[in-house]
Length: 140
Image (cartoon, rainbow, N blue to C red; front, top):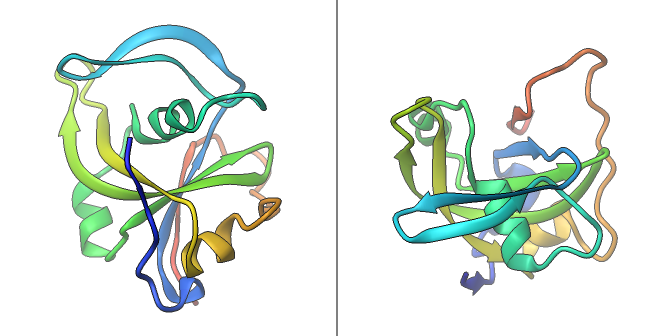
């Protein structure tokens, strides 16, 4: 896992994907050939690499929409609190269920990190009954 400072000049003007993570589940799973994650979801004591791996895989999402909307970052959200920002890299698809994952670089400082996570996370309100773990956020 790499860490990078975001180059975004104004995070509030940057579209992102919000990815809601459920509580942590232990499940060894291959993400990329030879790269495995220990589980998925969120827990308070998780490592940065576990958080990145939970955020980047496996979703029912359309990478072409992400590209068309100019989205370069994903924000991990658990229980309505933002937990991390990652820069989206290359996309790849799992053949058995057609879900997508992406390579990711953790963003630990800079404008987009400050806007979405900062020292204690940002509180987000999702619509009641919204079952999808993926939400596109674009500036108004």
